[in-house]
Image (cartoon, rainbow, N blue to C red):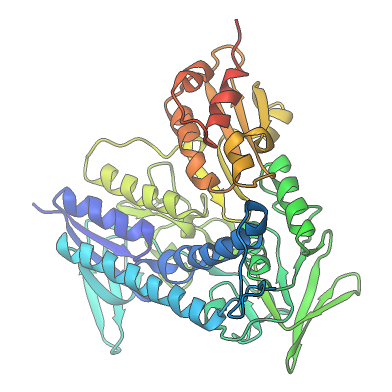
Length: 464
């Protein structure tokens, strides 16, 4: 008998699960409200990284003179500034997001997946009710249900977005005028990425951080490099500054801090974390246990406490990355449909902060070593000595490798620099496959290349 799988939510956790389930012969239905691809494609990852791609180009152009490239205006005189066309940029952002969503839906249709446009909720562990856009309801019976409803930007009573000048990160793509002074509240990954991007677009930025440094959850050495770069480029970083409220008076936005200070600008982006989309879905009534904050409690094969009900992605709060959501969704279907499955291992997850410079990490962290959670030898190599970096005018950044002192196995790594998201991949392979520092060192690298620094760091971990 064909197994029936119903997936609530069309983001990476949902659509990747659908592909696996269809491949394994299940009858698959996705119930989705906002568009296939979810926030990752429509309002978060794809849009923000498209915005950041433009910011990267402007950042590279600003340093072009050092490389012997000069820009001239129509009169043949040196151009004095580079400006962003924000309306055109945001139109491209939204266009690419819509195109990606359509591509995903076409692939789902090709695989035989049915997409129902509506809001899904549980009417028990084996039934999903879809509230359709026309007001009607459709009952879907399921042998397995996957909850993949994602999360939404967190707001506070004293800091409510208006969609015009006080914005969540999902609302910035409707801007057509360039902010004259942007305030970003929150110095986690999202806040740091937007602050860095808009700074590189030529917009004055103030970053309000309640912690003592930018990116408190990332490698401390990497965070210091980034903060030094941001401040050197003109960003005003207010550390140990907690926001109390955000208000608007005409074209002026005022951020009031808990110590009484105020910061004014033309626009404000709120990057205050995320809340799961799990309200009013009948989850607890169906036997699904929720953790503090409303996140769905799952094990390492994505099972919830209700038989036959799985969950994946940001609604679980496990690790809010599109890659993790996708893997959780795949694992859920592999497990339910009896295919080979390996439980989720967060120590093999690579992640990246898309600031300038980028910060990529995988495996165990320097913080864990310092806290005595494991013994590891650590080597850090600045990129300033790398020949390719010198050619490209890159001075900021480093590579860091962590390996076990006994076995020499690589257990973690950090890359800070341009395209760190690409450079981390060989380290990710080393961590996932328990390669030794010697094995990583003895693999050929291109000369000259940034990746040569990874091999050099591995060579420095060699022990006779």
